[in-house]
Image (cartoon, rainbow, N blue to C red; front, top):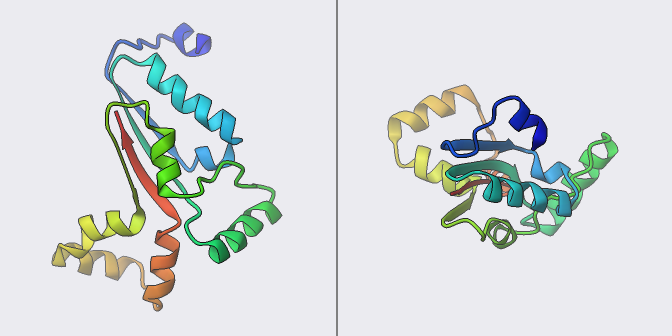
Length: 142
């Protein structure tokens, strides 16, 4: 906090706090502290988070083991979307969705966008794609 203020941080100005796959790598208490810091520091903040959520036991075990074996354990991966929402409960408004819901809202309902995305990334197994997407979430809190 002091280092940011020394560099000219003005916590009174509208601020975007972006955390892309950050909270999952922190110990839960450190992740909670970071969220509390953002909520308590800025007068007008929008927090945008893309992160890991463990929604199915089997896939989550494999995913957690793979990250641990690569030296990057997911120490603070949320157990559920409800746990994610709870972490951000101190904000006035919170919207947390798994990436299937985000994909459905932004892509599936728009034929041109669906074709564009499908041409970029070919998934030969829709069930696998849906499983992967269910283990990541998008959060808006402000």
